Length: 214
Image (cartoon, rainbow, N blue to C red; front, side, top):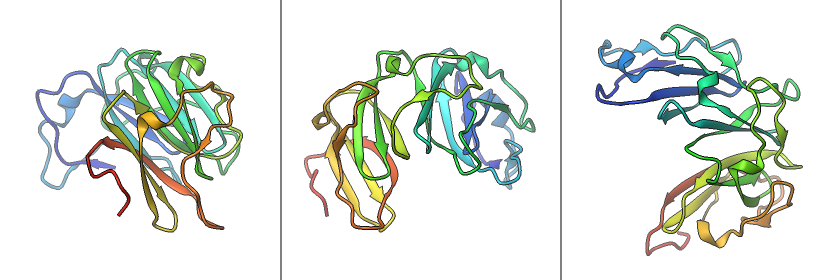
C-alpha cells in the first residue's frame, strides 16, 4: 500500500486496518514529504489487503467487526505508533481461514450508536458499550448470528444509510428510522434481496431532501 499525500497540519493518528485484522497506527506527519509516485505506507502480508484508514485523536477506542459475526472493542493506545515500513499488530483472532474484518470504526466514547448490517439485509442499531471492551488480539464478542457485511456510526438526525448489494442494487434509508436495540437482537429488515444477492457495502451519508431511490 502506498500513500500519495497528507496534510501537514493533521493532528492525532492514522490507523490502518487490514482484512486479516492487522492494525497499524502512524503519525500523519510521516506523509508530509513524499515522492509523486507515492511512498510505502504499510507492509501487507501475503493474501491480506487494506480495509480502512481511520483518522483518530490518538486516545479513543476502535471497534472492529468480522464476517463471521464477531466484534472487538479495544483502546486505540493498544496499537503503538510505528514507522511507515512496519506491518502492524493483530487486533482480533479470526474464526477460520475464510473469516475477515468487514468494518472498522473509530469511537470517541462508548455511548455512540453503531449500525450493524448482515449480508442478508438485516440491521440493528446499538450503543458501542454493548460490545464489551477487551484487550486487542482476542476473539471478541458475538455481534450477529449471520455474516456481517458492514457497520457505520450513527451520530443523530440528518443522516442516511446507503446499502449496496452484489447485484448492483442501492437502497437509501434514514438512519433514524432504524430502532435501537440490544447487541443480541436479530434486527430489522433494511433491504429485500433477490435470491443469490447479498449486501456488499454500508455507508453513512448526509441526509438530503431527495432521499428516494433512483
